Image (cartoon, rainbow, N blue to C red; front, side):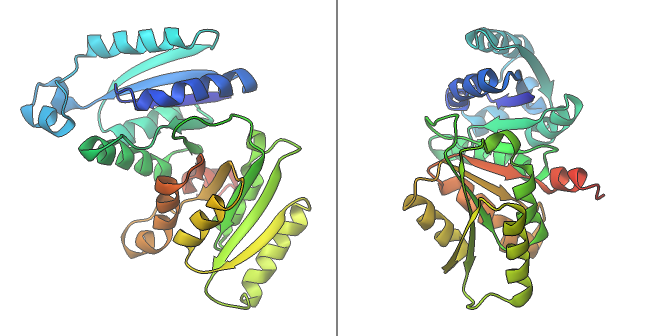
Length: 273
């Protein structure tokens, strides 16, 4: 397994490193540290410095930063990449080139514009990456005990069940959660959920009445769930507002890590174009 870790040079982005070290040791994975430099900042554009609140960073300094960060992951096979370009596009491109199996992010900065900038990059990557994206905030265990898969009954949300791999060890509890304002479930939707449960006999199904955004988070807060696995639709416009925003809302607010499966990954794994 190969894990890509995007870093933006802040201490917040580095908060995932102890977690990544644990994953790498548990999975015998290699780690790729990626620093993406904005071309405007490299050119000394004052607007870039005012937006980020930091002075432009030279490539030499960025590469030295990556070298020292790699050294801090003692015992883990680590490589570094320093690239220029759009952060979200470059992260997705490098994940594809490096054949990475997972991208790990600290999704939000602490306050203000840094929170918005790095958070928006993480969400954009989660919509378009060629592999799953794990959004981690704060300290958390690398061994998951209770895994939640929220579903709206769509093919994409149920495909998540087939791609949990190392995230679901044999003893983990698995819950399929459906939030609905309609009771009873539509016949076709109910059949899809029954089919999914038939494929995974150890799973438990819970159906909640209410809005997905609040229902999922309320359920998590009242449970011992320590990982949420979701699909994102990766669309723009009204479809994205209606469908993709649920995943993004949960990723922003959840108290535990959120594992996002982008459509590019799900389509590739099922042979769709």
